[in-house]
Every structure is written in structure tokens, then in C-alpha cells.
Image (cartoon, rainbow, N blue to C red):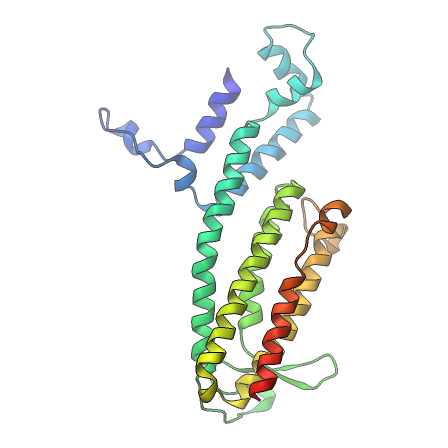
Length: 277
């Protein structure tokens, strides 16, 4: 009887405190998973699964199964494993589904914010190049050095985008559930596509006001983003230090991961820039 109750307490922890402190008050109507921070949902799944693994290592699983079975030693290994879980399969799936739904809404806002910030840089007409050694350029445009030492004008777009993407993929990999990692990669691909569509729309709306320096920067941004995306996909299947901690995609899941449209979207942006330049 303890395990389901424990799972419920884990989800509700800290959310019903006001109700407990004021007897007679109506309980909150919003579900617990809707009120949890999205990242906390996956962290809860990760913690519960790792705790269950530690119980198995300590041999506590069998003891828990015996306790749940009223001392009957005929329990199966599946019963023992289930007894050690703090989250039922249904509760875990509910948290994962809520996480994907909540982050989908957040990412739409993040995409809009990134496009808005990039638009402010896009419309800057001050293209005076400052001290190249210090990388001081027009507002929002920075000077970088390529692998061959050539100067590359770029904005903060690649850093902003892939800071978000890496955080989400790292969080998904930490659950040690490859299917969750697969779903999050698909969600990140949709997020990048939404940003691409927003940038392309702004290019078409503001093409008469764009400076040549920004066009160079946007082209370099897209090439850099394509490289970062390829590196991320490779890391999701790699082992050791080259991969993400927790889990990696199997060959079967990688074969089912059709996200070439992300690279094609950046290529389309580059072609649009070349036409304007």
C-alpha cells in the first residue's frame, strides 16, 4: 500500500501546503502536474528511476516485494521491481506527457523572443567596423574567427538557440529512457523550425532595410547552427564523454528519427540571404 501513496506524495509535495494549513478550505482545482515546473517533471522521473536502481543494487527490491506480498516468497522479479518504484508506470508517463506539452507552449514563446531580438539586430544600420582585434562591431554583431583564421561576422543566435536545445536534450537523456530522448529531439527540431520560419518571414518583410553586414552574419549563423545540430545528433548516439549522460539513441530509434528538415531549413535561409545580398 505504501508505494502508490508515496508516488502521490512525490507529485503533490509542496502544492497542498496551503490547504493543509487552513482546514476547511477547498483543495486547489489545478492538477499537480500542471503546476509543476516543466523541467522538474523530468527531474522527478530521473530521481525516482535512479532511486529504484539503487534499491536493486542494495537488494532492497526483493525485501520490498516480500513485504508487499504479506511474506509470500513466491513473488516474481517483476513484482519485486514494481515494488521498488516510487512512480507507477502511469504516473511516469503522465509526467512525461505533461512535460512535452508544457515545453511546447514555452518554446513557442522562446522562439518568438529569439526572433524579436534578432529583428532588432537585423534593423541596425550602423555598420561601422570598430577595433577588429577586440571584436567590436555594429550593435549585436560580433567578430569571430573561423577554423582557417578568416573573420566571421555572427550574432548571438547560434548560442541562444543551442543553449536551449542542449539544456532540453541533456534533461531528457538524464532520465535514461531512450524514448523520452527521442521525443525531445523531435520537439527541439520543431522549435528550430519555428525559429527558421520566423526569421524567414522577417527577412521578407524587412528586406529593404537590411544591411550587408547583417546578411553576412545571418548566413554564418545558419552554417554554424547546421554544424551544431549535426554534432548534437551525433552525441545522442555516442558513448562515453562524447555522448550525453544517462542514455543514448539505439540504431533503431536513430533510423526512425527523420529530422533532415532542420538542416534544410537553415539551407533555405542561406539561399534567401544570398538572393538579398
